[in-house]
Image 1: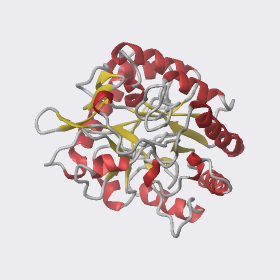
Image 2 (image 1 turned 45 degrees about the vertical axis):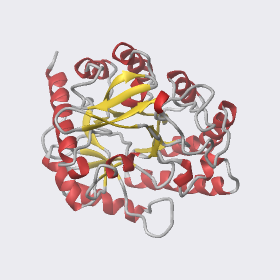
Image 3 (image 1 turned 90 degrees about the vertical axis):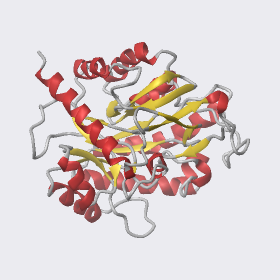
Image 4 (image 1 turned 60 degrees about the vertical axis):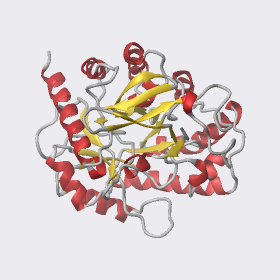
Length: 371
């Protein structure tokens, strides 16, 4: 079966999205209008686009009060202006929804051969410096309007999957089996990127971005590479952020309270040999160091190099136990669904997301009520 290179938006678009596409990212700082959230406890969140009237009404219907926003940016700028951010905040506020994070139009989880703004990941100068400068402007603008976080991804291969498998009912689950993966080309336009080269690109970026994030107090949340690949690489690329060890190294490159992770529990589970046992200590490790800025709360069946993505209540990771660990570490930000199963009768996967909102909301309320 031929490998699929895709980004998170294409996960839902591939299933027949009707204007609502998966993105990723986000953290939260405060509860908003609607039913109350417990102060200091994690919040039900969302990371789907677009941030418009129709979709905001949908989110409010299911009790989602904190989201990652997608500002409408005019022209070819890679940053939203203060006015553009303010319009988005005001629109969400009509429905009692807080914008706790934004997703910029660069550094997404896209496949490098289709990426419109590849300079940072390709180490192309002076183009990457111009892109970094625009991201620095976005950080400043977020501080001016009170958006506390930006999510991003340092991706070359995008989201690797080998196809879909049947799930419960008429659901279809995305799958990855390394032994079935056959790249369309031996290399991407990035050529060979070994571990040293990849770390150089990451460090170059962090050295120029995190000091600005420190100055303006904006949390920068990086998503792990999805999935991990063998050390020798895949399509010539070593996914250095596709292991727990790589993520541990990443968070130490800059000593900063504003440098951390968009902690995709699903992706990190994919990187483990026994996720149902190992994931809890990984949560504790990064949580104890206050490096979890946002959680993609999704489940899998399987393990590194061979897994399927499933609904949160049917995977190998016990989500009741997981949310207790997030409470244990004092995690205060968003838990959000991600990579939900697809169904032909569910355009845009709105039903699948609604199921996940209710499931996560129930877990949050249960753990909040527990002594």
